[in-house]
Amino acid sequence: MSEKVNKLAEIIMNEIKINGPLTFARFMEMALYYPGLGYYTAPGEKIGTAGDYYTSSDVHPVFGAMLARQFTQMWPFLPVHPADRLLVEYGAGKGLLARDILTALREQSPEICPSLTYWIIERSPVLAARQRETLSGTDLAGARVRWAENLSATGGRITGCIFSNEVVDAFPVHRIRQTAAGLKEIYVTCRDGRLQEIESDPSTPLLAACLQAQGTSLETGQTAEINLAARHWLAEIASRLACGFLLTIDYGQEARELYHPSRFDGTMRCYHRHKLIANPYEHVGEQDITANVNFTQLRQWGEEMGLRTAGFTTQMNFLLNLGILETVKPAVSYVFDPEILRATMAIKKLIMPEGMGRDFKILCQYKGLTQFPELAGFNGKFGRSGR
Image 1 (cartoon, rainbow, N blue to C red):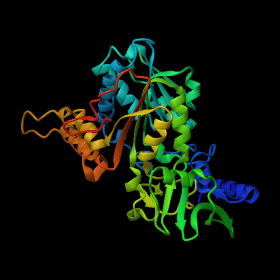
Image 2 (cartoon, helix red, strand yellow):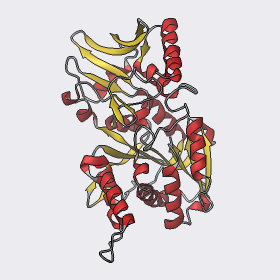
Image 3 (tube, helix red, strand yellow):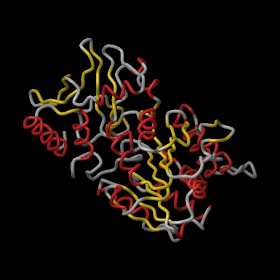
Image 4 (cartoon, rainbow, N blue to C red):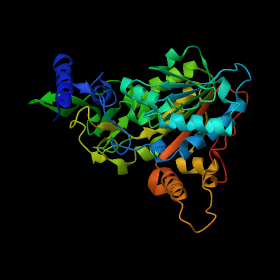
């Protein structure tokens, strides 16, 4: 166990000694985001071959190009004024997706760039520095790139699009378990110098209310996760978005599938050096902790906050509707072309059901528009998923 892990585990155990057992959400918050020691806030590679997991932006620039195509189609739904419109990306990782989107906008829709400000919301100073490095040599064609630790730091209310790619799955989750005595919550305590789990009464009635609102229930002994942090995230966005869109890209399901008995032990898992780890109390601060996103919750909470649903579909349908297959140029001869092969294999990984195509979903919500937005990614021959 490294010195960093020892120190962070010691800090967590000291908090338990002072305040008593922690909710799993509090433990996860500390393990991922504790200043300088958490998984996302400490130095070191997180994403890609040298890290612990991949994202769609690591696969090929075509993913960013498809998002740029969708953003371009969103723009006419926005009011003519203000002229300054925003693209706001939550958690930009290494900055690859920002680079690919801006590059594609420069090539596809250069008229958008002069009035565009691209904000990156990033809690991790380490990742923000990496993003600046990635974007430092990019020809932004008039677009401005800014960084902030939270949405309120971007200034006034927002006209444009706020989006995230594999961010909500890293929000701290509460873990619950149905028992013969009723719904219980899983807490983290310390025994014999080790972090261990115990069950007790839920820390908030919102946990049971969430299940009830979705019309779902758990089998006796079944474990599940509830992402209350996503509700706070949506509330902040809804309060700041004057007119525009929220696009959420992540792996997950709707409630009826997410809480099905086939997922009896829940979906919380960890990744360490591209290996799946079941125990979140190992490698504290050195492994990613994640849980599948509940898209039913995002839609329900969004509606309560004034965010209407424009579309919901799989990543496969979204990318196919946007014309991802058309981006691969057919070979003009039988000569081997490594670039065509690379693009073809990347597209296969992004859209095939056994890859990212089925497990990843795209949810688009909107606010302040004068008409329902028929968006290409959600409405095409590969499936309509609007209202």
